[in-house]
Length: 429
Ligand code: ACO
Image 1: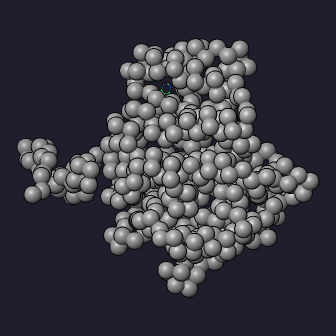
Image 2: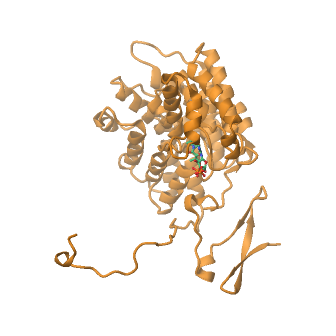
Image 3: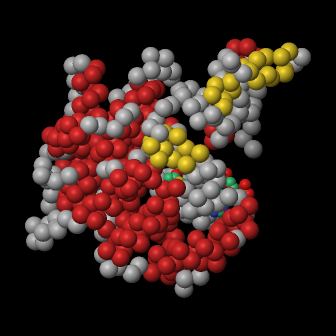
């Protein structure tokens, strides 16, 4: 039986149905609110607003739960591969062995990037941020790969191209930024191994693929693969709702992810830890600054809009960090400092009161550093991982015949109707 929530306004009572999700989450369906009452809602940052109904990812921020298509992130991180998780997110179920093999073959078939794109890469100024380059180049893909004949073919091939080429494009931008020769994808390598090889193989030094690092990269990308209606995913859905091509919608997602409050936090964490280290390692000062309301400084990698307990991805990332560093025989002073900083923050009254825990970005930079990924590529690594989620979320919208153009409203607080005054009659004071 449908439950209703009542709103009383100007002496009248209006009823709105309650929508219940499969995990018991409840929402008031206010899609007719303005029509019925003349009111709109105001919710800056959309903290209480559901923008869609989705069957892709479930998260419970209070309990620290994250599941893709019902499967806990811990199980996927332990047993799955990034390609299998990608299939799961986009198709709604785990693939058979045959389907998984087919997906790998398709990714190999589409892994090359149009040679003419190299000219663009080579002409970006050297100091360009890789996220800016990636966003621009993903948008440019539409010009190199025009629309296909049938809608189904267009969607399937575009999705495959994006998933496969983004990895090649990311490695390419790194090589070109260093002035090195581009390494082409190899059909004999898996998705993650191929990426590492394209990043680190050189004509003078062969890159030995380490299966433990391949496994770590798989896990890293699985942990980033989707996170329901976050800032960049909402950007993809909103831009996509205008029926723009998928490349353009994903390019918008990459731009949104770049910001330090979102995916750019992984780069910001390492920069923050390095600054603290250069400052003599006094992390207590960083904690005091983060608590000072007059100081805009925040503890990067801490806090989350939804998680009000430990981010389950951060737990896995922390464990993996130790494993990777041990395997590579690396002692990173930043890891020890990160652990001490985390322990001190978790005991601090401010962080307890505000429910601020480490998020996925707190430990991820240390793993990427150990793998040899340069700091300014960290957010690109996040973007490659988040791509299947963006695509799955976009597809869910595109598959809905009632997909509405995203268009929020506002409360206007500017001047009331004002007369235009010609320039020679305006007061000059
Ligand atoms: N350090 C210090 N104080 C913080 C922090 C932090 N990391 N995060 C939140 N707060 C405080 C704010 O100052 C604010 O205090 P106030 O209410 O007294 O003004 C309060 O907590 C709420 O902060 P908001 O920014 O309003 O809350 P929101 O839910 O929007 O915050 C966010 C989420 C943006 C992630 C925030 O915690 C933050 O800036 N963290 C640091 C950046 C970061 O790590 N981002 C990655 C997030 S994960 C991801 O997107 C992949």
